Amino acid sequence: MMKIDGSSQHQDVRIKCILLCEFHPTAGPKITFQVPEEYITKEIFDAVSVYIIPKQQLHRTVITVNALGYKIVGYPVGIESPKYIRNSLIFNVCFVCDDTLRTVQYEPVVRKLSSYLVSLEMENDFLSNDNRRQRLPHILQQILTELNSRGQCSIPINESNTLHLRVVKILPPPPKVEDYHVPIFLLKTSSFISSQWDLTTQQILPYVDGLRHIARIAAETDVEIGLVKQCVENMVYHGVVTIVPLFQYSNVYRVTPEIQKLAESKQLQEECIKYVSKSERHMPTFRNVFMLYCGMTPGTTVRDLCIRYNPHSVYIDEIKLVQFGVMKGIIHRLHKYPVQLTPDPQASVKQRNLTKMFNGLSSYDEICCKTGLSYQELDEKVESDPRVVVCWK
Image (cartoon, rainbow, N blue to C red; front, top):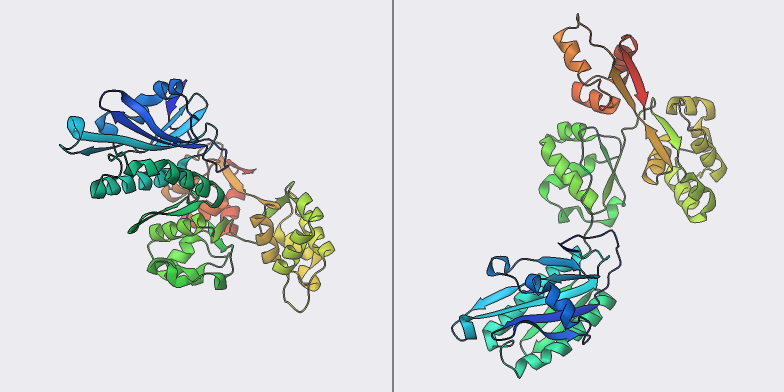
């Protein structure tokens, strides 16, 4: 079975072989050089050669071939000139990996390497001159070795040219940021330079505190909400912030299986104590922190927890306790989703607009953010309507 592209979940970074292939004027598609030698057999190459040396329409396009146990990433190029037989030089430099490997991080590297070889060919016939191109196996071997060991390479080609390549880690796309989402820093603000960010991001940075949601940040900074979302998504992508639910004392949380890691890891315990402490002078005990987390059960609000344990008396900041637990996956927020069972024929237009969101898909956070209702006001409307039930999830 053969398919074009198909990156898998496997994250190991390993190039097994580098090929330089070309279209020979009489022999057709062929492997000119490969390191290590004879890694790809002639039979395998012949089976996929139509994708390695494709039609002109696919030139200067990254092509990933996943077939026969290999994943081959290439960037075929054609140079038009009357000095070549058939008036063109067609070649492709390819990285060969296991078929289970995620290879998207190699695509810009292959593209840059091919473009560099085009420049060398245009300058001094580096590929078409038999004597000059004999250096290619040595260069390809250096690229293979250094990219696998260090993820980058700097290889002198001649007195005036040095080839620089680097494998850049490709991160998954960030989750979609909603109006009611709350950004919170993963890094200390002192650990990065705000001037490295664009002006809009610099404008919203002081308002990222783990308490303000996107809509509130947009209103307080007078920045269009779509731009705020883009800035926050960009910071999430770069690991500067993450998204947590809106904190309210009426929120309900439950512990997750990750609580086991907190019970076993001394390093995580120390990190947790330092984060949730009300002050650096008085640190809480891990016993009290753990007791508060274990008290988070369905039906128990943060307010109930505070009344029962009085976290301030044991030097614990309940807001930071919740933030740390959510960021580390120790606790999970249980959201309320109102569901209207039957429509109210006597409802006003305003009421009908509100109950349209009582569909089991919109949480209290989302509804409050969109309507401007407080959590308590929405709760009162839901509780007073016998046609509406609440689903916790």
